[in-house]
Image (cartoon, rainbow over all chains, first blue to last red):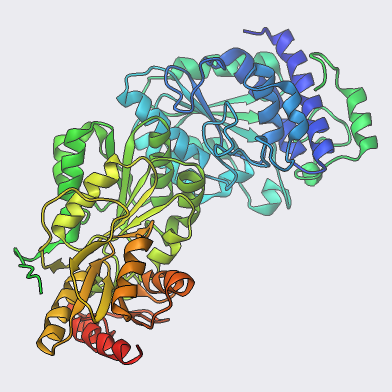
Length: 281
Length: 316
């Protein structure tokens, strides 16, 4: 289990992986991958009870994670490989023909660590709820985690799932929202007026914790609070306030890097801003 | 011809309810979910006996399919039940992503399919669902013909490891099939004949048997084959019968586009070209009416099947 200081170093490498993967593939989604990189690094290297050596898709005997915002494969694949689910070098194949590292998560290709395919937004929360229900039936006390984008929360299914989880007291579920305020067409407020997402989840009957998604101590504190609420009768949402493209000056705070690859020069520039801590793939 | 006796009119959705109960009793992994249609889908018996593993989802089908996928990932055998329209068209993306591409062991229980839904009208008379479900890789498509076969097909679907679309209906219809284990992928030859083959699915199977009796009275020997599993199609049985009789009618309570008729015509065109007539819906929606009124008005009853048989024999 990594300390906050170590997690920051790991997150720096994860951001390097994200940018290098997307640059090599000449496509992919770096902006959102970087906004959730800190708290998902904390999830994989500190919070979640998981073991790549014994992992199976059914998530029996372990915590489970579903990436609902499926386009964020750069951060997902970096975390999985750096955790030991598959060789780090395989990141070189991201989005290439024949790869297990498909543009969006695929179970068909059999990449270890992928619990469910995703990419059509708004669906991962429901699948996470299903796994959580099964864990209750099986008396498995492990927790199910999932991460939503804030733009993704415009999907109606998210709110169907929100209502269902509260009604059925799915209290072994910790969802996270990456509240980076950006989506493809602009800011979330200009595109769809998401408004006060925290108040909306509270109104739907969830326990909601808000935290700075780039402050590692605050992130760990939020997860600790969330874990303490498991089994208390309500599903749990952590609203992580973040910045799209966080960590690289020319990518930060704009929707323009939602789904665009940096040039070689831009990648080199970004590398000067992110410390290499675990060795590049 | 072989005689089939109607043991009494029963709805196929009740056959589903009976099969679900039996499958759930035998296997505690079986977990039904419904979107406010427990009564219509006849899940009451299961819900009463196994309330801890029955999920009422409210009128929210997209989440229902997603939650079912999650349950399946974790080793359960979920059945999601609603009306045909709401468990296909409304949730096509969820079925494609979470169930078929996601390779999850989810069963789609689709009731009130076809025009025999009746009085609710065209909004609910789904005549396109077979096309939608057939198009999805990994999906098995089953459309049983009566109460008994629906019960046994439900039990077979629960045992099968993979996505299944199970289609059944609302009205009470003849219950005539023997009570035997259902074989997924098998075409059931209900009557052997030599002049024409009637391939039928769902409610049209009984209509086809009635048509065959009428044809027999006119000296025509009709083979009747129940295509209970539309995908994977028993192509061997289809080709063998078409080759034998040389003339084919396909009867289904579904529109032409993407239905069993096009499927069989495609198979025959590739291997054994024979004339084909279609008893089905055309490029159209239905309307309110009783099931029998609608079947007659939309050319999908025994009389139209017999007429199609005579017509196709002239094209030999």
